[in-house]
Image (cartoon, rainbow, N blue to C red; front, side, top):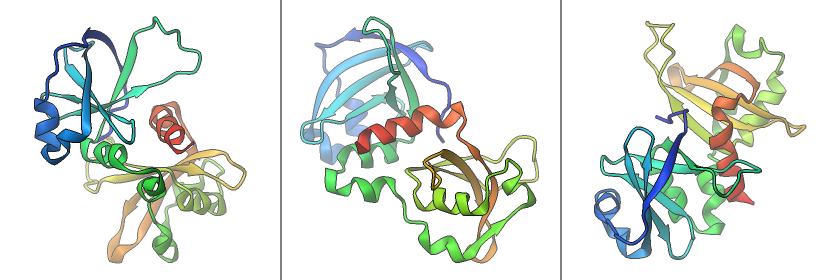
Amino acid sequence: MHRLRPQKGRLVSYDRPVWEPLIELAPEHVGDFMWMHEHELEDGTRIHGYKHWETRRYLHLDHGGRAFVYVWKDGQDLDEPAEYEEVDSTWLLEIVLAKPEERARVFRQDVAAEFKRLKWTRSATKHRVSRKRIRHALEHCLLILEEDPPAEHPTATDKRLVFLGTDGAGVDLEVITAEAAKGNLLVIHAMEMRARYRSAYEEVRRWLR
C-alpha cells in the first residue's frame, strides 16, 4: 500500500555499511548494489540507501522490510532535510533493476485488453472528465497504485486500482477503478490529479526522461 505522507530524514551515517535490509529483500542482487548512507526519519525509522551500480537507481530500505523513495521538490535548497515516501518494496525493486529498454514495460502496465470490458458507475464522470479522456489516461498510465476501499464504505471489500496518466491534451488524471465480475474493470472516479498522488507520479515521470 502506498503511503501518502512523506517524512523528513536526516543523514546519520555514510561510512558504516549495513546490508541486512537488502539481504532480506533481494539476497540474489546484493552484489549489484553499493551501500551509500543511512538516514533517520521523523518517526525514528532508520533507512539505508543502496545504489545499483548499473542502473544508478536507489533502494531505501528499513529493517522491517519497508521501502522508501526520495521525494524531490523543484527549487529545493540543498541544505533542506530530504523527504522520503513509503512505497511497495517489490514494485520499487523491479523499477531499480529495470534496464532503460525495459522501463516502458515496468511503468506502462498493459491495460488495453480491459478496454472492451470497462464498466462505469454514475460517479465516474461527475468531475466532468469524459469517458474518452478516461480511456486515454488508462491507455497511457505511468503508474498504478493499489489502495484499500474507503472507510466510509464499510461494505466494500475489494481493493481499488488507481491509474495515474494523462488525457489526450496532456492533462494529468487520476482514475480509480475496482475489479468487477467476469474480469470487468469498473471505473468509479476520475478527475485531475490531486496532490496526494502527485509526488509518486512525478518520481516515475522523472525516471522516464
